[in-house]
Image (cartoon, rainbow, N blue to C red; front, side, top):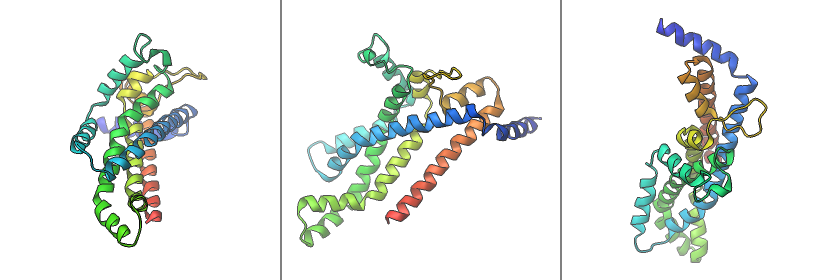
Amino acid sequence: MAWDYIIQGFSEAVKLIDDPYVIEIAIRSIKVSGMATLMAVAWSLPISVLLGLKDFPCKWLVKTLINGLMGVPTVIWGLVLYLMFVPLGPLGSLGLLYTEMGISVGQALLITPIIMSIVVNSLESIEGEIRELALTLGADELRASFQVVRESVGGIVLAIIAAFNRAIAELGIALMIGGNIYVRGGVYNTRVLTTAIQMYTVRAEISIAIALGIILMGIVLAVNLLSNLVRKWLE
């Protein structure tokens, strides 16, 4: 029976959750996507603050472009980056193809518009009210802008968490740029949770696929819980 097959897969998956191989893949996923999130935050946050607090010609066009980039499929990002990172490509000399860093760079580009869109919307939703109040209380423009950013911390945290979850759950970039490489004891492995789940599902090795899926969902839920606690603490 179909249900018996699924139930058996779940029961065997529970036994595999603490398997060293499974844990290694999970840790690599967190490391790669964590690095991607840090890189994306480093360049997205300053630009988002400027975009959210300053008015300039064609601002609407920039925001439209950012929102449009959020919908680009990960396989398109993977294809473009593959053409850039391949040895004969423009960035081939960097040696990023089939590396953890290559995946991180690709994921960072993928989640950049997510961070920017959420942060900009968060800033713009309170910018007028908070800025006016700060100026009324005697603050200068710089301090007023700082206060707006300070009041938007909850939105910034939400953007970071959403970006990390998007990065760790994507498949296209991890597969096309990382190559799903795994050699036991190897130092250049690139297999992460999503690529492993895809591989074992295709092989019909349902138990380990479910085990990896449970871990992936656990990571996402844990990160969301942590973000809620942080936001409540900041408020």
